[in-house]
Length: 508
Image 1 (tube, rainbow, N blue to C red):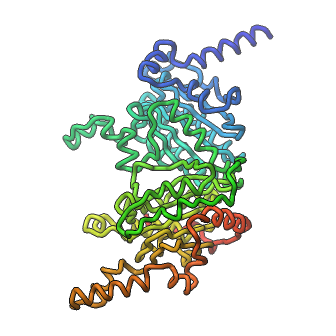
Image 2 (image 1 turned 135 degrees about the vertical axis):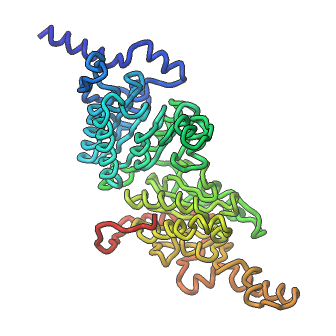
Image 3 (image 1 turned 120 degrees about the vertical axis):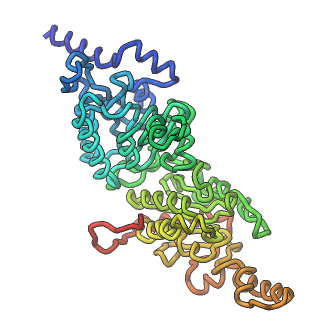
């Protein structure tokens, strides 16, 4: 018995040692934590329960039979974040560069299968050199097994990827299919082909950082949602973030006790919208003054900043927030903002998170670049996402809601449950000046000015839309939080089903 216990301790120590002191020191020298150190920060103290600690690879080629490290380059198991169950895998760069072998993949698959069975989020900490070359096709098969589970888990349990080192080649497709991706600046990168291959094939010279670093993916490509300064910051943000999400599509949104009164009035909102229609204001101010304690977790803040997406709470319960941002491109909808918001709306719908939409949109962005890159199809994604969503939908129009963009932004016609407008709202096909120049083409400037004033008097208010029932109520800005809170209470029992189908065919 004692010899078995000694053997147990020896094996555990060997697994915990990973690739050995030298490699751990190299990891620390790069400003990176080890796989186990990351889990210590991510999970509640003492909650981590490891599985498959003793798993070893089965490769005999290229001298691999003599290089066996227990755990095989990934630490897997479950734990809690603020008392709520999560399943995790953390790739260990100190063991074969975190490369994925057949057994390594099996460990990840086991965790994902279990998470789906019990209904708990999966958090993947990626730090890997990619497929283990020595294993050849067995490694590629391992990746495909993981991909298949990413697809099956999509919309069933939340999936969060933290890219904390290299993630290249086929390895990028697993995080790409998860719901949210966090990256670490200067130490993580994602690309299908690295700088060397790019140079060989296209003659382009590019650094790893410029090709697929955290800044690239959170600003240009939208592959990643948020970028953080270091491992610790990213892991603490993940703890905060997962608190907003339900455990699965069968569970209600989490509730956090709050001292923030549901009927709190905010008089400063009455003067938020400037007198001039062309003057911007910061939509973040409205969001933070409406949600509990000003706590708002924004997703993709550096990409398509003309639309804001993220999570807040009302009466302690999570809501998804989508809002046009007048500070950037006047809050116009373009390709990037449509895609960003569409994906966010679909995530909220999949996990029964109510959606609150703040609208101030002058229309879709004109121009050949937008048209030639498919604004029609990409704009349709947002329209489609809102139209198919069956979760509670509350919309507040603060100022402009012009043209097709009015329809797209969670209008009453797309089964919006409660559609409110501020007194400053203008709902029309287009701005007064442009409309008058079309209707009264060829008139003198004086007549145009007179007709513009007429048009403004007619449409630069919310009452025409309200008279048709497209707006449920014109509300005072200071009472916005109270109205939304009451609305969400009413809609808790909402039941709406789309017609049966295998799945829809969203315009991708």
